[in-house]
Image (tube, rainbow over the protein chains, first blue to last red):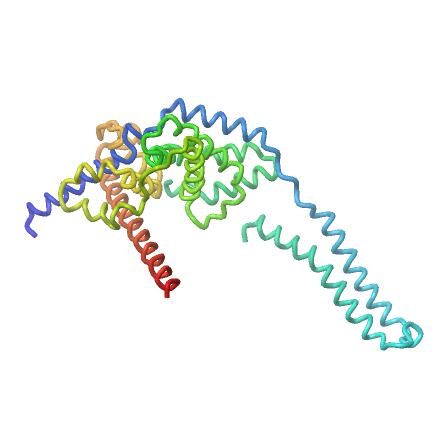
Length: 125
Length: 216
Protein backbone atom coordinates (compact mmCIF):
# COMPACT_ATOMS: atom_id res chain seq x y z
CA UNK A 1 0.00 0.00 0.00
CA UNK A 2 1.58 3.34 -1.00
CA UNK A 3 1.56 6.48 1.10
CA UNK A 4 -1.39 8.07 -0.75
CA UNK A 5 -3.58 5.02 -0.21
CA UNK A 6 -2.69 5.02 3.44
CA UNK A 7 -3.56 8.70 3.78
CA UNK A 8 -6.83 8.19 1.91
CA UNK A 9 -7.78 5.32 4.17
CA UNK A 10 -6.93 7.38 7.24
CA UNK A 11 -9.04 10.23 5.90
CA UNK A 12 -12.03 7.97 5.18
CA UNK A 13 -11.74 6.52 8.61
CA UNK A 14 -11.74 9.92 10.31
CA UNK A 15 -14.59 11.32 8.21
CA UNK A 16 -16.71 8.23 8.63
CA UNK A 17 -16.15 8.11 12.37
CA UNK A 18 -17.21 11.75 12.54
CA UNK A 19 -20.30 11.05 10.42
CA UNK A 20 -21.28 8.04 12.49
CA UNK A 21 -20.95 9.95 15.74
CA UNK A 22 -22.95 12.80 14.28
CA UNK A 23 -25.66 10.35 13.22
CA UNK A 24 -25.64 8.70 16.65
CA UNK A 25 -25.62 11.66 18.97
CA UNK A 26 -26.12 14.63 16.67
CA UNK A 27 -28.79 17.29 16.86
CA UNK A 28 -31.68 14.84 16.25
CA UNK A 29 -30.93 12.90 19.39
CA UNK A 30 -29.56 15.58 21.66
CA UNK A 31 -30.91 15.91 25.16
CA UNK A 32 -32.10 19.43 25.85
CA UNK A 33 -30.32 20.68 29.01
CA UNK A 34 -33.67 21.92 30.35
CA UNK A 35 -35.19 18.46 29.97
CA UNK A 36 -32.09 16.95 31.56
CA UNK A 37 -32.43 19.29 34.54
CA UNK A 38 -36.19 18.74 34.82
CA UNK A 39 -35.87 14.96 34.84
CA UNK A 40 -33.07 15.15 37.39
CA UNK A 41 -35.23 17.28 39.69
CA UNK A 42 -38.05 14.75 39.35
CA UNK A 43 -35.58 11.97 40.16
CA UNK A 44 -34.25 13.88 43.17
CA UNK A 45 -37.82 14.41 44.41
CA UNK A 46 -38.50 10.71 44.02
CA UNK A 47 -35.31 9.89 45.95
CA UNK A 48 -36.38 12.00 48.89
CA UNK A 49 -39.77 10.24 48.91
CA UNK A 50 -38.31 6.77 48.57
CA UNK A 51 -38.44 5.09 51.98
CA UNK A 52 -35.25 3.48 53.14
CA UNK A 53 -35.67 -0.30 53.03
CA UNK A 54 -36.42 -1.94 56.39
CA UNK A 55 -33.15 -2.94 58.06
CA UNK A 56 -32.31 -6.62 58.21
CA UNK A 57 -33.33 -7.94 61.68
CA UNK A 58 -29.79 -8.93 62.67
CA UNK A 59 -30.46 -8.82 66.41
CA UNK A 60 -33.68 -10.85 66.37
CA UNK A 61 -32.24 -13.51 64.09
CA UNK A 62 -28.99 -13.57 66.05
CA UNK A 63 -30.92 -14.10 69.30
CA UNK A 64 -32.95 -16.89 67.72
CA UNK A 65 -29.72 -18.55 66.57
CA UNK A 66 -28.22 -18.31 70.05
CA UNK A 67 -31.39 -19.73 71.66
CA UNK A 68 -31.42 -22.67 69.28
CA UNK A 69 -27.72 -23.38 69.89
CA UNK A 70 -28.41 -23.28 73.65
CA UNK A 71 -31.32 -25.66 73.17
CA UNK A 72 -29.08 -28.04 71.24
CA UNK A 73 -26.36 -27.86 73.90
CA UNK A 74 -29.02 -28.31 76.59
CA UNK A 75 -30.31 -31.43 74.90
CA UNK A 76 -26.77 -32.84 74.65
CA UNK A 77 -25.96 -32.06 78.29
CA UNK A 78 -29.20 -33.64 79.37
CA UNK A 79 -28.42 -36.74 77.37
CA UNK A 80 -24.93 -37.03 78.83
CA UNK A 81 -26.18 -36.47 82.41
CA UNK A 82 -29.20 -38.72 82.34
CA UNK A 83 -29.20 -42.41 82.88
CA UNK A 84 -30.60 -43.83 79.76
CA UNK A 85 -32.90 -46.50 81.21
CA UNK A 86 -34.75 -44.01 83.44
CA UNK A 87 -35.62 -41.74 80.54
CA UNK A 88 -36.84 -43.91 77.81
CA UNK A 89 -37.11 -47.48 78.94
CA UNK A 90 -38.23 -48.75 75.61
CA UNK A 91 -35.53 -47.26 73.38
CA UNK A 92 -31.86 -46.45 73.40
CA UNK A 93 -31.48 -42.75 74.41
CA UNK A 94 -28.81 -42.18 71.77
CA UNK A 95 -31.45 -42.89 69.16
CA UNK A 96 -33.48 -40.02 70.55
CA UNK A 97 -31.03 -37.37 71.73
CA UNK A 98 -28.34 -37.51 69.07
CA UNK A 99 -30.71 -36.95 66.14
CA UNK A 100 -32.47 -34.29 68.24
CA UNK A 101 -29.14 -32.55 68.84
CA UNK A 102 -28.30 -32.46 65.12
CA UNK A 103 -31.81 -31.41 64.20
CA UNK A 104 -31.76 -28.47 66.59
CA UNK A 105 -28.24 -27.59 65.49
CA UNK A 106 -29.42 -27.52 61.87
CA UNK A 107 -32.21 -25.14 62.78
CA UNK A 108 -29.72 -23.02 64.66
CA UNK A 109 -27.51 -22.79 61.60
CA UNK A 110 -30.26 -21.21 59.46
CA UNK A 111 -30.19 -17.78 61.15
CA UNK A 112 -26.41 -17.97 61.49
CA UNK A 113 -26.09 -18.65 57.75
CA UNK A 114 -28.51 -15.86 56.84
CA UNK A 115 -26.50 -13.39 58.92
CA UNK A 116 -23.30 -14.54 57.22
CA UNK A 117 -24.89 -14.06 53.79
CA UNK A 118 -25.97 -10.53 54.68
CA UNK A 119 -22.53 -9.67 56.07
CA UNK A 120 -20.85 -11.00 52.92
CA UNK A 121 -23.22 -9.02 50.70
CA UNK A 122 -22.65 -5.83 52.65
CA UNK A 123 -18.91 -6.18 52.42
CA UNK A 124 -19.26 -7.13 48.71
CA UNK A 125 -17.29 -10.35 49.13
CA UNK B 1 -14.71 7.67 33.10
CA UNK B 2 -11.09 8.53 33.66
CA UNK B 3 -8.71 6.55 35.85
CA UNK B 4 -9.77 8.49 38.95
CA UNK B 5 -13.51 8.20 38.37
CA UNK B 6 -15.32 5.44 40.24
CA UNK B 7 -16.74 2.72 38.00
CA UNK B 8 -20.46 2.08 37.60
CA UNK B 9 -20.63 -0.88 39.97
CA UNK B 10 -18.92 1.10 42.75
CA UNK B 11 -21.32 4.00 42.22
CA UNK B 12 -24.39 1.76 42.26
CA UNK B 13 -23.24 -0.16 45.34
CA UNK B 14 -22.52 3.13 47.09
CA UNK B 15 -25.95 4.44 46.16
CA UNK B 16 -27.70 1.29 47.39
CA UNK B 17 -25.69 1.23 50.63
CA UNK B 18 -26.44 4.94 51.08
CA UNK B 19 -30.15 4.27 50.67
CA UNK B 20 -30.09 1.35 53.12
CA UNK B 21 -28.41 3.41 55.80
CA UNK B 22 -30.61 6.40 55.03
CA UNK B 23 -27.61 8.19 53.54
CA UNK B 24 -29.72 10.00 50.96
CA UNK B 25 -26.82 12.36 50.21
CA UNK B 26 -24.69 9.40 49.10
CA UNK B 27 -27.55 7.97 47.06
CA UNK B 28 -28.13 11.34 45.47
CA UNK B 29 -24.42 12.00 44.81
CA UNK B 30 -23.77 8.61 43.27
CA UNK B 31 -26.92 8.65 41.18
CA UNK B 32 -26.06 12.16 40.02
CA UNK B 33 -22.70 10.86 38.79
CA UNK B 34 -24.39 8.02 36.90
CA UNK B 35 -27.01 10.39 35.51
CA UNK B 36 -24.33 12.79 34.32
CA UNK B 37 -22.42 9.92 32.75
CA UNK B 38 -25.30 8.31 30.85
CA UNK B 39 -28.25 10.71 30.51
CA UNK B 40 -27.25 11.99 27.06
CA UNK B 41 -26.45 8.55 25.71
CA UNK B 42 -29.67 7.08 27.07
CA UNK B 43 -31.71 9.89 25.54
CA UNK B 44 -30.06 9.28 22.15
CA UNK B 45 -30.70 5.55 22.49
CA UNK B 46 -34.40 6.14 23.21
CA UNK B 47 -34.67 8.68 20.37
CA UNK B 48 -33.32 6.19 17.85
CA UNK B 49 -35.30 3.27 19.21
CA UNK B 50 -38.52 5.26 19.07
CA UNK B 51 -37.75 6.31 15.51
CA UNK B 52 -39.65 9.52 15.03
CA UNK B 53 -42.03 9.25 18.00
CA UNK B 54 -40.37 12.26 19.59
CA UNK B 55 -43.34 13.34 21.63
CA UNK B 56 -42.92 10.28 23.87
CA UNK B 57 -39.13 10.28 24.13
CA UNK B 58 -39.00 12.59 27.13
CA UNK B 59 -41.62 10.54 29.01
CA UNK B 60 -39.82 7.29 28.30
CA UNK B 61 -36.51 8.86 29.32
CA UNK B 62 -37.99 9.96 32.65
CA UNK B 63 -39.81 6.66 33.25
CA UNK B 64 -36.58 4.77 32.59
CA UNK B 65 -34.62 6.69 35.21
CA UNK B 66 -37.42 6.41 37.76
CA UNK B 67 -37.63 2.66 37.18
CA UNK B 68 -33.83 2.41 37.44
CA UNK B 69 -33.94 4.24 40.77
CA UNK B 70 -36.57 1.84 42.08
CA UNK B 71 -34.72 -1.29 41.06
CA UNK B 72 -31.16 -0.09 41.66
CA UNK B 73 -30.70 -2.89 44.18
CA UNK B 74 -31.24 -5.50 41.49
CA UNK B 75 -28.24 -4.28 39.47
CA UNK B 76 -25.44 -6.74 40.20
CA UNK B 77 -22.89 -5.62 37.62
CA UNK B 78 -23.15 -8.63 35.28
CA UNK B 79 -23.57 -6.23 32.36
CA UNK B 80 -22.56 -2.59 32.09
CA UNK B 81 -24.83 -0.08 33.81
CA UNK B 82 -25.72 1.45 30.45
CA UNK B 83 -26.74 -1.94 29.05
CA UNK B 84 -28.92 -2.42 32.12
CA UNK B 85 -30.46 1.04 31.61
CA UNK B 86 -31.11 0.21 27.95
CA UNK B 87 -32.94 -2.97 28.90
CA UNK B 88 -35.22 -0.93 31.17
CA UNK B 89 -35.65 1.64 28.40
CA UNK B 90 -36.62 -1.09 25.92
CA UNK B 91 -39.46 -2.19 28.19
CA UNK B 92 -40.60 1.39 28.64
CA UNK B 93 -40.51 1.93 24.87
CA UNK B 94 -42.65 -1.17 24.33
CA UNK B 95 -45.10 0.18 26.94
CA UNK B 96 -45.18 3.54 25.14
CA UNK B 97 -45.80 1.93 21.77
CA UNK B 98 -48.43 -0.31 23.30
CA UNK B 99 -50.19 2.76 24.66
CA UNK B 100 -50.13 4.28 21.19
CA UNK B 101 -50.70 0.94 19.46
CA UNK B 102 -47.68 1.47 17.19
CA UNK B 103 -44.43 -0.47 17.16
CA UNK B 104 -40.89 0.32 15.98
CA UNK B 105 -40.22 -1.10 12.55
CA UNK B 106 -36.58 -2.18 12.77
CA UNK B 107 -34.51 -4.36 15.02
CA UNK B 108 -30.77 -4.37 15.66
CA UNK B 109 -30.37 -7.61 13.74
CA UNK B 110 -31.54 -5.97 10.50
CA UNK B 111 -28.12 -4.50 9.78
CA UNK B 112 -25.63 -7.09 8.50
CA UNK B 113 -23.12 -8.02 11.14
CA UNK B 114 -19.81 -6.19 11.20
CA UNK B 115 -21.03 -3.72 8.60
CA UNK B 116 -20.33 -0.44 10.36
CA UNK B 117 -16.81 -1.18 11.49
CA UNK B 118 -15.86 -2.66 8.10
CA UNK B 119 -17.44 0.12 6.06
CA UNK B 120 -15.53 2.80 7.90
CA UNK B 121 -12.31 2.10 6.04
CA UNK B 122 -13.59 1.38 2.58
CA UNK B 123 -14.80 4.79 1.44
CA UNK B 124 -17.50 7.29 2.30
CA UNK B 125 -20.40 5.81 4.25
CA UNK B 126 -23.59 5.57 2.21
CA UNK B 127 -26.30 7.96 3.40
CA UNK B 128 -28.81 5.16 3.84
CA UNK B 129 -26.55 3.56 6.45
CA UNK B 130 -26.38 6.80 8.42
CA UNK B 131 -30.16 7.11 8.27
CA UNK B 132 -30.78 3.69 9.77
CA UNK B 133 -31.97 3.66 13.36
CA UNK B 134 -30.14 0.43 14.18
CA UNK B 135 -26.84 1.88 12.94
CA UNK B 136 -27.39 4.91 15.15
CA UNK B 137 -28.23 2.73 18.14
CA UNK B 138 -24.97 0.84 17.63
CA UNK B 139 -23.08 4.09 17.65
CA UNK B 140 -24.74 5.15 20.91
CA UNK B 141 -24.00 1.77 22.52
CA UNK B 142 -20.37 1.94 21.42
CA UNK B 143 -20.05 5.54 22.67
CA UNK B 144 -21.45 4.50 26.06
CA UNK B 145 -18.60 2.05 26.57
CA UNK B 146 -15.95 4.77 26.18
CA UNK B 147 -14.25 6.49 29.11
CA UNK B 148 -15.97 9.77 30.06
CA UNK B 149 -13.16 11.93 28.73
CA UNK B 150 -13.19 10.30 25.30
CA UNK B 151 -16.97 10.43 25.11
CA UNK B 152 -17.10 14.11 26.09
CA UNK B 153 -14.41 14.99 23.56
CA UNK B 154 -16.07 13.07 20.70
CA UNK B 155 -19.55 14.32 21.54
CA UNK B 156 -18.36 17.91 21.61
CA UNK B 157 -16.22 17.66 18.48
CA UNK B 158 -18.61 15.73 16.24
CA UNK B 159 -21.97 15.83 17.98
CA UNK B 160 -21.67 19.56 18.75
CA UNK B 161 -20.05 20.12 16.42
CA UNK B 162 -17.34 22.27 17.99
CA UNK B 163 -13.95 23.28 16.64
CA UNK B 164 -10.91 21.60 18.21
CA UNK B 165 -10.07 24.87 19.98
CA UNK B 166 -13.50 24.86 21.65
CA UNK B 167 -13.12 21.25 22.69
CA UNK B 168 -9.71 22.11 24.18
CA UNK B 169 -11.33 24.92 26.13
CA UNK B 170 -14.12 22.64 27.32
CA UNK B 171 -11.67 20.01 28.53
CA UNK B 172 -9.16 22.52 29.89
CA UNK B 173 -6.35 21.07 27.76
CA UNK B 174 -3.88 22.45 25.26
CA UNK B 175 -4.67 22.26 21.56
CA UNK B 176 -2.03 19.60 20.95
CA UNK B 177 -3.18 17.49 23.89
CA UNK B 178 -6.78 17.74 22.66
CA UNK B 179 -5.85 16.66 19.13
CA UNK B 180 -4.02 13.69 20.56
CA UNK B 181 -6.93 12.89 22.86
CA UNK B 182 -9.39 13.06 19.93
CA UNK B 183 -7.22 10.74 17.90
CA UNK B 184 -7.13 8.19 20.75
CA UNK B 185 -10.86 8.64 21.31
CA UNK B 186 -11.63 7.94 17.63
CA UNK B 187 -9.48 4.84 17.77
CA UNK B 188 -11.22 3.69 20.96
CA UNK B 189 -14.61 4.33 19.36
CA UNK B 190 -13.74 2.25 16.30
CA UNK B 191 -12.49 -0.56 18.52
CA UNK B 192 -15.63 -0.40 20.68
CA UNK B 193 -17.84 -0.54 17.59
CA UNK B 194 -15.91 -3.44 16.16
CA UNK B 195 -15.91 -5.30 19.49
CA UNK B 196 -19.64 -4.78 19.85
CA UNK B 197 -20.34 -6.06 16.36
CA UNK B 198 -18.14 -9.10 16.96
CA UNK B 199 -20.01 -9.86 20.18
CA UNK B 200 -23.34 -9.44 18.39
CA UNK B 201 -22.28 -11.71 15.59
CA UNK B 202 -21.04 -14.31 18.12
CA UNK B 203 -24.37 -14.05 19.93
CA UNK B 204 -26.31 -14.52 16.70
CA UNK B 205 -24.11 -17.48 15.79
CA UNK B 206 -24.75 -19.04 19.20
CA UNK B 207 -28.50 -18.53 18.84
CA UNK B 208 -28.45 -20.09 15.36
CA UNK B 209 -26.55 -23.11 16.71
CA UNK B 210 -28.99 -23.46 19.61
CA UNK B 211 -31.95 -23.25 17.21
CA UNK B 212 -30.36 -25.85 14.93
CA UNK B 213 -29.68 -28.18 17.85
CA UNK B 214 -33.22 -27.71 19.17
CA UNK B 215 -34.58 -28.53 15.71
CA UNK B 216 -32.59 -31.75 15.44
